[in-house]
Length: 129
Image (cartoon, rainbow, N blue to C red; front, side, top):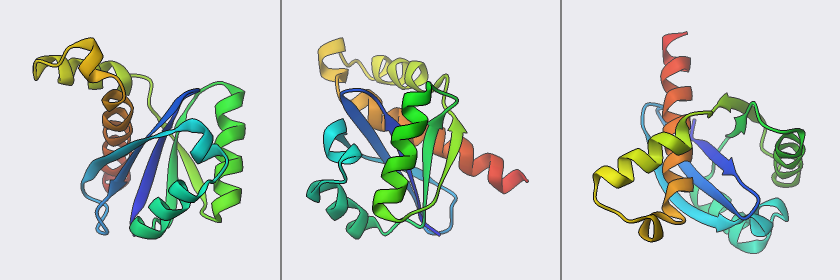
């Protein structure tokens, strides 16, 4: 089953996907939050391209994020679960800094790397269970 992670922010949403065997998470892109929360055509096209069967959303977060995640899930007809992503953004920034990127160069990349990190953590936890 292919799983898609959404790192939902107020401005941007980082997107990552797993391989069909649920072993490896890969960053895909960053989309404007309005396109994802509104289930706009670019987001629907992304869903068609990757065909996820499950969405993994960040959590535990503010109630706003939970509501947005539920709305996105309902709009695209794909069930969702929450994953603990508290350290994913900090880890993503650290990783990008180690690669020599400046704060300006990191903008936008952090969200998809964070989505990939918390999806990988969720996949690893699921495999251990």
